Image (cartoon, rainbow, N blue to C red; front, side, top):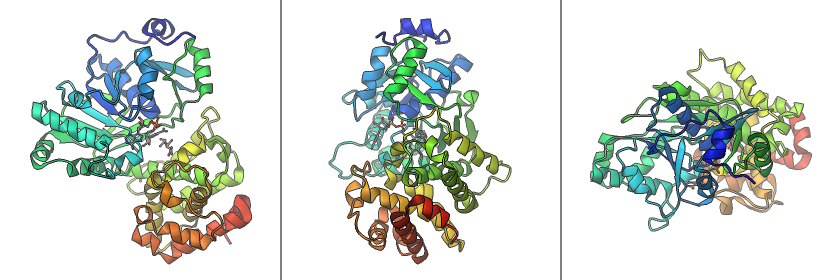
Length: 450
Ligand code: NAI
Ligand code: CS2
């Protein structure tokens, strides 16, 4: 097995630029997983190539495990990204810190001007105990404290997680942990722009690694497989300098909200419906079923699209068609179990916010309710539940639909008091869960209009 190294890499990827030394890292990334490697790191690579400005290498940090560092460090942090038949080698990640490395010092370094994060939706929960292990937010605040002490200059912190208002959410969590002097410094020196990110990046499988080895001629353990589509919309609110991401196709805007609502509801809301209703192993198989694809189109058209605003000039119909095409991509072996994970952290912004808006407008969000019923069936019957609230979600799989709905709607962290007490929503979800349990999906879809 030939491992990916700079020597082999320069042979197989002519465009892999020799990186200038010393390898500056103007960006620190928290949560260096598959998505960062296929999305922000690619934009950063292309921004440096377009401008020749080599200051923007990425110092990745995974403070929860050494797994990714173990994959990337032996190959000089180089890795391949495959989108269809396009394979490119990315060199923007220049080092990866592991637990025990001095992340605060990196965040306090004057060369560091930007921090990006992909720490998953559950990374934005408050620490369970003040004396508990530090969270990513806690580590970020420790870095800000060191940066303030060093008077190291302005810093922009960009959340790249699938949350509405992710910049403001992150800023609020950081603020809670800042003592007054640090808070005053941060208000003068740190910004938290929102960003909407989109590129479907399934977890890399052994088959992906085999395929990449066949294409590259080397075993690239850091490889990621994705789709050609990529989008990054960033609020143009930077405290200091930044990579020329706009030269790589990113959109710098004043208001990210219309973009994030469209994406989090139409793409991610449909993804969650697929995960909890379709019964398929992969997304592409789910949308290959005509009846289920018809349900997805109705979910997007009838329950989700009416909640989108500020998109008048946008071809929403074309965007929805493109989503179904992206979902149908057979080259993306996107397991629905990956999407099903952390549902308690995903449902609120993807399906529950649009449901409450439809209810407030006097409509019955029957199609959303069926997806929520699917989630309730999932969390009640799954053998192993990958969710930070798992211990509060699992329950008696033989309990009746009404009892299960009553029990789960009572989790205020997910449904809030309004949906808990909404009789129309409760009845819609209970009816959906009863039908799914008694009749199965196909029969339930056939009776959606009755
Ligand atoms: P991944 O599993 O490859 O990486 C997740 C990263 O988050 C890892 O570094 C992990 O250590 C860290 N992490 C997990 N739980 C954490 C916690 N509680 N606190 C701090 N760090 C934590 O997943 P991937 O594919 O990189 O996705 C990560 C996030 O990126 C998603 O949750 C989503 O918010 C966003 N995203 C993912 C897309 C995709 O298709 N994979 C597309 C668009 C956005
Ligand atoms: C998916 C997202 O795992 C999930 O929850 O819905 O990661 C999805 O692949 C991305 O948001 C696409 O941009």
